[in-house]
Length: 307
Ligand code: RIB
Image (cartoon, rainbow, N blue to C red):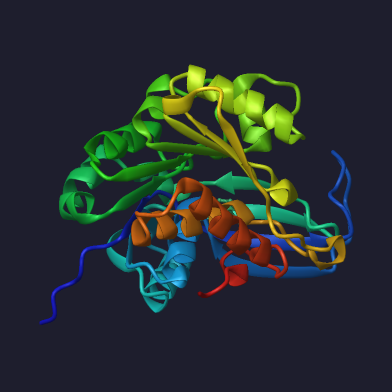
């Protein structure tokens, strides 16, 4: 029997089924709107990031929990189809697969509610069980849709480059999470919540937020800014911040931004694992290019490009 090759990118995190309603605009509280299209999709930030890296060409492995239901079975088959190593993706009896209710406006904006179901069972024991993957992978990717204790264990156990996508944002993110990850990555609204800055809309404001997150203990911080690209900085050279521009996408071509952040993280992990000699700036530019392709197609994983 052929031996499984070591993964380049290991993702420890969530897998969720997305229920997406496309609507002229996002509803106001208490309002019922007529949408014009409905689509189900494979989502969850963890699995999205893993599939994004796999589509760029990385050997990937996912450690995640699904329910022992139809959604879970379908999802497992889909991950195999995407060539993800699913040795440590488990379907749990008595648990339902996580679901997300997503509204996407004609302008491409979204809002998302998640009910994580089986994802809540991902634990520190799963890090131990997947010890070989943790030892062999080059890059580890985690998010915050699964229990934080398990994420802390995962980050502590890993010796390569770890990326924490601190999403969805927590107001009181444990400082240990910031300290443990080699790269701490958030979008503008998540950075706003963590730093208590009223809004982060400009490159200048993002620079201030990067500085604050470094002060809070992070090593390298990336803040993604949608069409403005990303700003990053690192604790080694405080006060030096870099701005990487995103390729221009005309507004009429932006159809769905859901999962664009995950496309960015997956592509970032792939580039770091595959081209370790390159600078972070080059990795971020490649990740921005992948994210800007994903906003031009509907769906989450359905919109991720193949290299
Ligand atoms: O980042 C987009 C993802 O967030 C969706 O796929 C949804 O499942 C939620 O996890």
